[in-house]
Amino acid sequence: MLRAPERTFHSSTSSRWFLLALLVIGTQLLGCASPHQLAVNLDGQPQNPFTRTNTAATVLIFVSNDCPISNHYAPEIRRLQDAYSKRGVRFWLVHADADETPADIREHSQQYGLTIGILRDPQHHLVKLARAEVTPTAAVFAPGRTLVYHGRIDDRATALGRERPEPSHHDLAEALDAVLANRPVPAPITQAIGCYIPR
Image 1 (cartoon, rainbow, N blue to C red):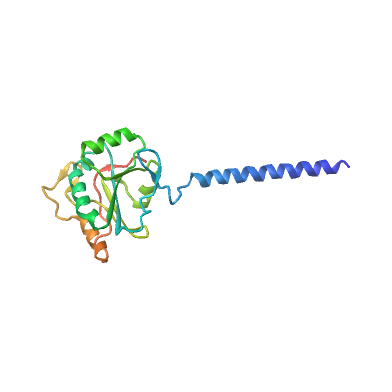
Image 2: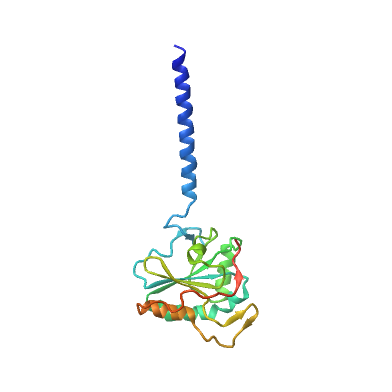
């Protein structure tokens, strides 16, 4: 008669530990990036830049408010968007610095005339997908979320504080031309020069 409560006690304790383990695992899974929630927009809503199925390519350009090299590329970013968006290429600006507020990012985009869709990536899900280390970095994804190019926009910047009057290679444009022509990207990886993305 005394053993039944003892068995009940052990069974109840095991159930509690099992439920606690499920809760911990569930919490960890929720903390992982859902394929539909890779980033957030400036209103804090989850966003996935790869959801459209009718795009020829998706371009992520990592920028930051305070990086002079990144800011210097604003006119070229606008030119590329104008030239390629009409050919089925979708562009996104990605801010990966968690300290940049939505208000600061909006002001920055207005100041530099950037009308591209904006994403915040404070958890660096897109940073990892694109293998980005500095701003500005460009990453081109073919349909199916296949990374086919990552690196510099062009080779105008030769080192921090040093640049050519005009670039000799337009690497991002060359990568997009290859993807649109269904050809391999000639140089799928280049060295981007800029400001390190804070980890």
